[in-house]
Image (cartoon, rainbow, N blue to C red; front, side):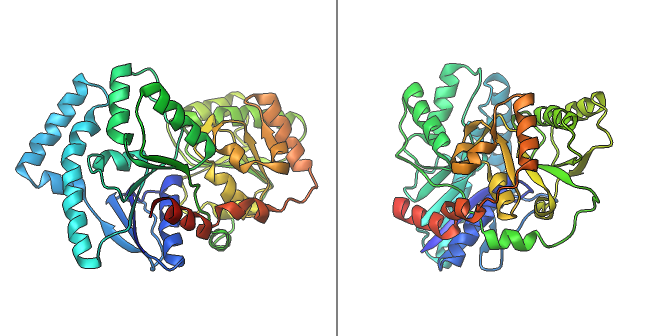
Length: 382
């Protein structure tokens, strides 16, 4: 089988790492696997040599055409008057460029059996192509907030009506089924296909270096943005310290909430206890050497970092959130689910650090094995 995984960028991020993992999963299971990406960033990830890479610079190709320059300008101006409409107009043009590039690629390699589109931003760039081989992957809980209902309905229809959709968790499936009812549209097919994790590869990456912190620590990995709710983690950590934990707190990542988080750390006099590493291409050594990994999100499509921490053999605590966390935190792991408040999360952190029980993480990771995920894509969509 010939498969292409399509993603907007290969920047450092959870969704991008998963796109690479999926392409590698198809390759390692005997399929011809391609990875197509649109935008280059200074810091990027890359797959192993068994995956064939292609860079479709849709923006550059658009700007090289006389019409494309004016179409881009028209799309930007339209967005001023019709909020969130930029992708609708730009996608009309960029979809056609992608279609031409894909045809040229298929002339060289042969026809693809599956085109797996990772991330809504990727789908927005090629949404007008209604090819039955396309499977859009929904990573997150879908919401347009307080947008005008007519605009919201129109945008959802543009992207998702009559399209194959793979959702990474039961929570995301439920979210889309509710959207179908509320907005009166219908996907072609919706099913749950979660994200793969290569446990052995994760363990290998975790051995690449030793973190430069000579103290026991608790770890958080992810964007420092409102959805990840790092201020709650800081409050819970401060509460746990009052219960006499001696651990430092390490935060791997950056984002729009950074100044808010730093202000809270200063207010709670935790400057000597909380350490920031910034974004890391390989955060797994930090996971391996942590005594506890904590996820404090308000919602998660799946909660991939929980799987990565467990692959490193590290205990996990998570807030109860909308989405896929409960797909991971099952059976005895449900004891480490905390309510979205300071006291409960802080108490769960303390009890997890004191807990002597051994957990069979490999058992919990079985359903996320690459071979299983590949078989599900083939049986549902090929």
